[in-house]
Length: 417
Ligand code: PMP
Ligand code: GLU
Image (tube, rainbow, N blue to C red; front, top):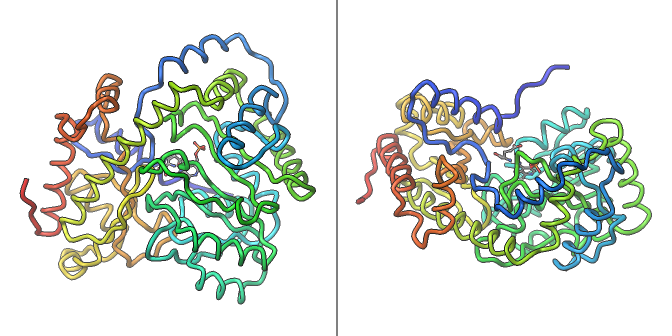
């Protein structure tokens, strides 16, 4: 078996290598939440350094209890026994796809790793287009058709809020999709890793509200607290026999592959998931910054004539340069791969092509991640978090200017500064 580096991680390495060579590259390729570690969390980690035992596979009782309380306060009553921790939610998604039977139904576009993991577990993917309003769930009418004709659908993955579109599924679409999942006996994996980052602060709709017995929720601290490199993820399994069985299977995979989440990281999770006021305030500030910067980048793309859903959560946009198709084709840009390659090589703008997310080759759609614009140093990132008007910070204004110039050159449009 051979596989390649995941496109998100690959573009991060490629952009950093170009920068080390002295190239000026605007890094819109990678969904790393570029914010500093709150000092109170760094203290908890330092104090937990002596914890060097392996501990239970699913996590310490302290961490699982904190996660149960965290879910319960967010409207999903949970016992500690329903929770499994892991080094990131990515391995949990992999273990779930390995454990659950049947083909994997994905929204199209969907985050890069679901289809890659399905392939690693030997599963087929059924891609279903998302509604015009928002991504992260399949369009219900298309899903009904796909399920009526599919051989062996088993698992439906939903991303609410969504990466790559930066939107939140409409409640009616989510309900309709969950009804279809119930009718066809599917398991639902609800990837809620961006749930704390809805820009207006509101809760995102959740699949477990509609299909409580068959929905496994995955999430973690990589996005809400920008702790991606600390690898703290956790899953909530449904109450009841089916949930118990899947949890045991996932714990079995965990025990053979990663043993457990690093013990000091479990101490961090236990602290954060108790919702101390300072942490909630930090997440609220991050949410405001993500919303402000994503909206500004959205304005640049729409001013350049792109079609793009307005950002509602997290730090992504999924613009479509389709309105410029003829002009781009005249320059040999006939699809997303060529578009992303041209943006990087000719304009120093790193984005990922929609093809990495399962989109069609001829669509002129790219994924834009806005979370590495906040600054390159810890000081700049703190300043961005604190600023009343982050867009006026010199480094952020310069990045938006770089993007404006690039889009102007690409599309021949111009926008008053
Ligand atoms: N799901 C989605 C939609 C993501 O964007 C990411 C990106 N990191 C993950 C899951 C995995 O995150 P992690 O493994 O850091 O928890
Ligand atoms: N999820 C992030 C992204 O979509 C990056 C991290 C990852 O893919 O593991 O860019």
